[in-house]
Amino acid sequence: MTSVYQRTGLVQRRTASSHAQDTSDSRDESRNYDGEDKVEDHDSKETRLTLMEEVLLLGLKDREGYTSFWNDCISSGLRGCILIELALRGRIELEKAGMRRRSLVNRKVICKSDTPTGDVLLDEALKHIKETQPPETVQCWIEYLSGETWNPLKLRYQLRNVRERLAKNLVEKGVCTTEKQNFLLFDMTTHPLTDSTFKQRLIKKVQDSVLTRWTNDAHRMDKRILSLIYLAHASDVLENAFAPLSDDDYEVAMKRVRELLDLEFDNETMKDGTNELMWAVISTINK
Image (cartoon, rainbow, N blue to C red; front, side, top):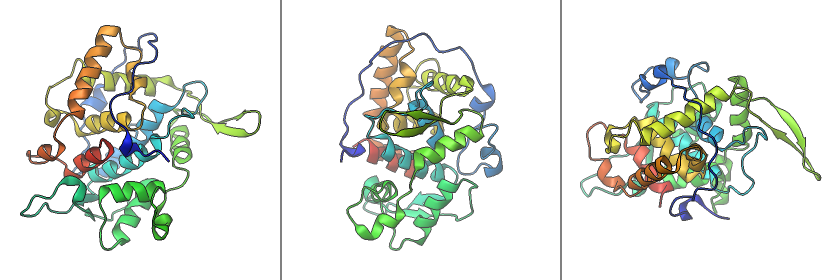
């Protein structure tokens, strides 16, 4: 079984299609959703998608309504999304570094607040984290939640049918619909796009973050979009956001993503206002 932790480098560009529609969402760009923000605003199905839903949406084929059969990375990537989403909502955090400044990957995940988020997947993961003693590391939790652990006692932590449940969320939010497709030997439920605006807006947001809005400083980037770039790369779907770019813009975008991947993640946690658990997940999935 191929783990997301074994992946290195960037996915090479496959094809270049037409430019994405030039739409913008000043409302989304002007709002910053970190742990201290009101959960009620963030959880509004009419205004926001979760990190998990955004990564899945980038991976979904528009007309076919399913992710690539060859993508064996998105499962772990989505579990990383769940942990970061919980961290940005102020539900979990990393234990203190201590005098010896233990590395991010060796520090344990602590439940900071057990207040329900209103999202079933997030609340299910939060319940597991709260009830587990002694605490576990980010890498352990990604393995537990994805069912990739070799410890049979931890298999009960596995979050099942995550992609299907996230796709249903997208259906509820009016982004996708549900269909049945026949693949010779079996029938499969698919979720083609019904409203391309959400995906076009998402793609433009990712593109702008490494082109027109590039700050050359990860610490100055919005935490959610920064997390999305790292998680989309780990899930092997970032290429889908860059494929519509011109050759020149594509090269610039990929160069800047490489710069983000080459950062010393432990050093990033020492800056003011950082989210240590976010960087712990990023460090783990980009080993």
